Structures are given as structure tokens and as C-alpha cells.
Length: 281
Image 1: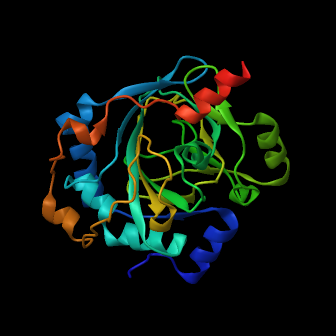
Image 2: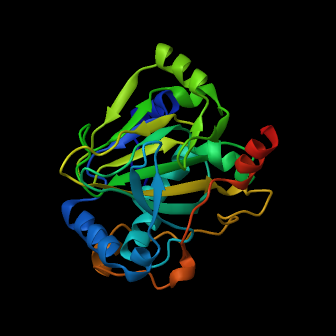
Image 3: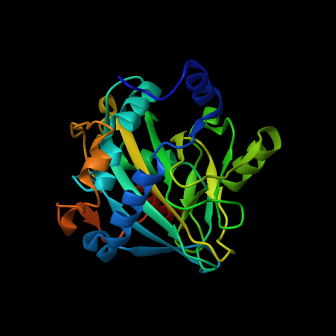
């Protein structure tokens, strides 16, 4: 196992819910990822919008299986997967990946939420799940970098509901109390930096009000022992074929070979959440 985390970083993940790894991918690697994501016709064909309460949209693409594209190899790389397995204490599989693209002066905000606020409704029994966000561009306060509430993952799952616009967000009263007792952190990133974070970490981001775009790609993982008990739009346990870290540069700018079926053309809120809101109304 070639986890990137030192004992201190593993302790920080346990206490804070996240660890920022500078230079997770070097400049050559991140250029390959950026070019492939920008140019892959299947990925570009699958782009959709997710609007915030003010109608500003973030462009997104979501795919369930990593495949053999260079960005799929990044999700299968030992530096990422072995680190995830240390974080989650055992074998993991690729749950899904997604591009979040905030265009200059137009990119939308994301409301406070936990990823497990969604994934719980997909039949994942335990919060033994985590993600790594990789910066394709420089992420700052001005172009809508991620914000997190440090230590909020220890609160556990918070109720989520469908909000004005097209997003699912956490109970605002709970979030307000968290912000009274836990620090708010702005995660500013350079291209190639990777933020590893727990599925119950509360996070959000502002609109992009700058002339600079903010694109990130997220690789999401589930523990093998946490196989969902209901069928939904993300995969059941599928063994993950790790690749050596060198595979990224060896592949060059390679696209998905899985075809458009590997990508989800649209991405709706979890059916369980939507059914719950209907019942309440």
C-alpha cells in the first residue's frame, strides 16, 4: 500500500474530516487531465447544468466507472486509492466521479450539504465513504473555492431537503449551530492539489464572480463492505483495478473508451429525498 498520508495527516482526517495534499498531481499530469476532460467528446456531450437559488448554473458531468481515460487512470492510481483505503480502513471501490465547472462570472453556488446526505438515500448503510477533489484550475475565494466546516463530519448525518433552485441542502438550523462551534475554512487550491474529505463533512461554495474559471474533478469512493442495499443510479460494489502512478503520463491525453453509457446525461436529486418532500407536502 502506498498511502500518501503520514500518521499526522491520518489523525487530521479523523479530527477535521479532510486533508489537503499539495501537488497530488504534478503540472504535467494535471495538464493531461485538463486536456482530456476538456476534449473528450463523450464527456462534453454529457454536460448538464445544476442551478443555484439565484439561477446561476454550474456545469457538470458524472460517470459511474473510471474506465481507461487518463482521468479514469487518475481515479484508479495507487496514490489515490491506497490513501482512500487507509482513510476508510479497508478495500474501496469507485462510486462515481464528476466534473464541476464554474465558468467565469457565471458559475453558480452550492448550498451547505454533506455528500452522505445524498448517498444515505441511495442505500449506503454506513458513512464509510469519501472523496478527493482535484483542482484543474486555481481555486480561490473569488472564483468559488470550496468552504468546509472543520470537524463537522463528527456531528453525523444531518437531514437534507430539496431547496429553491435545483439543489439538495442540509437543515439550515443545524448548519447555523455548527458554524457557532466549529471553524469555517476556505480551501484555496492550486492546479493539481487534492482535497481528501469524509462524506459527512459539511461543505459549500460561492458563485464565481471572477474572470477566472474554476474547474474541479471529484473521485468518490465507497467501502467494499458498504455495498448499497437498494438499486440506484450509482454502482454496486465493483472491484477496482488499481494502476501504478506512472500510468497517467504513459497514457497521455486519452479519452473514455466506454462510450456515452459510462456517463450520466442528467443527474437528479436522490429519489428517496424527492419522495420524502412530496409526502411532507
